[in-house]
Image (spheres, one colour):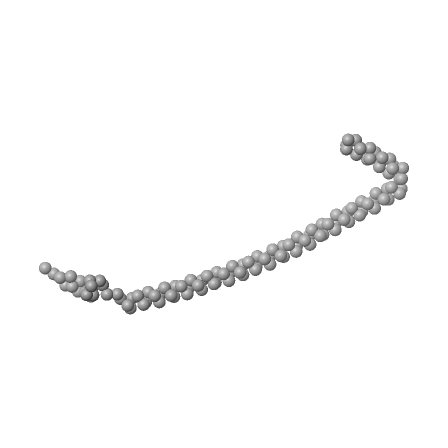
Length: 121
């Protein structure tokens, strides 16, 4: 009958220590430790890169938001100015109408006051 080494001649035979346990492979363990250390460094580098990208995107988003706020404030101010101009024109027209027809203006004011008094009762 064939022995184990004869069946697998390319494979080195495993040796046992006196207590029956296998001998550790220092070369393989050292390589594994180096690979783990390299992976840890790579993960740290990737995490730092992602953090940098996130900071860049946050800064970019903040800048875009500030720009939009400035545009909205500017357009809001323009709308307020336009409304104030309209009310100024209406006020001028009302004053001109009151000056040209004072009795009609007094009668209109009395009618409006009477309607408001009826509504608030």
